[in-house]
Image 1 (tube, rainbow, N blue to C red):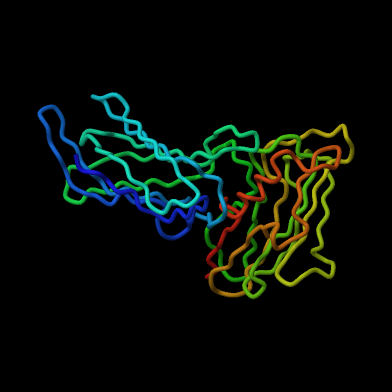
Image 2 (cartoon, rainbow, N blue to C red):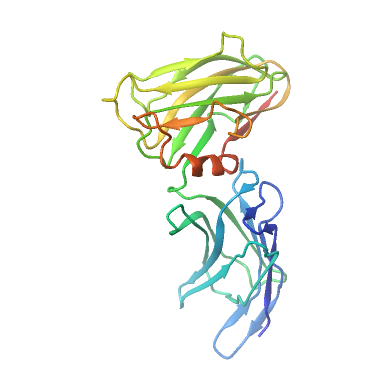
Length: 293
């Protein structure tokens, strides 16, 4: 049986993304036996748009192949701290219809959980040099801060909004962060409260204060301990005006570069997921870009 090499940009616990591949099943081709035709497709795993490299506690990759005429094929590969190459036998039936990829990590309690996952339909792998591409994104249980653009492009002078979202957290009572932006391309014009912490939450920003160039400080919190504790939703929306042609990028400044980043519960202590959120901040959709025409 031919062995498929799994190559990729794993450096122990590090996953490298954005551009380039996470994993490659390098062997390509087909094989037949009396009962089944198989292919060795080239498999590309990519992180979702807006995700960049960071340190992740990924310890195992699981691949599941599904189709109408066979039981699901499940392959699992453990990842050690010094491993640079992964190897497995992976034959894909040519009538396979779907592939599911799950990247596991071990949490603070020593329990395994899915950190990233993605799936893709399978088609035409009976052709020469077959390929399958799968995009990985954080699972709903992954604590993330993210940005969301309501439009992909604007014209010069037009105003647009960037939503600051939170997901996968518990007992969120308040948060603060810095939002970075391209000072040459856009100008912030306002910050509005989102709905995740309720209509009576308090919002503060340094838009009209002596702030750092290319950064806006934002803080949102409940008025008192009786407020609701959010688990997901939009915490704030920032408005910008396009002032120069080109592509402008906005992003949440990670903890290593900003002392403002914090998410707290009602007693003032960091939420339980705060450390994990900091670890994942730079691989979630913490950056967005917009084209200005």
